[in-house]
Image (tube, rainbow, N blue to C red):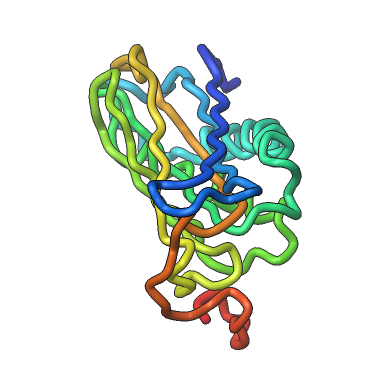
Length: 192
């Protein structure tokens, strides 16, 4: 089975402020999403391993594009992933992206240890998905808890999947609520 891409979406946001003091250097948030044909739409298939394998290849193609869009992998401090499954699919078809997208993105980030947070839904075209992000080295670093919205007005159609990856080059633009700081990560277990 070969992945059939209908469209790819690359989005980059430069965030200077949210009403507080403007930053000289903005926080950059980026997302890449692909809308593909769901080969399992409308039917139950027990073995989903072929789409897992094909989706890993797809992720290997789009991860470098996302990293380049935000200034390079060495700039990435937070990440997340998500999937929107068209109405003729099932949530498990979105779960394929956990391994295919999440592990592939982590492999591109040498210091990444924390789990890649995720959101997934079965929904109609035009659905906007809020994808959670957290710090790549320790998921308890509170300053990096945020979300990025992904979606497309015409996607996914009932027999399609939208797979997305999101990254950020920093914290929330005006974070100031305390908790574990990135510079205080010491345990090295992906949490603290």
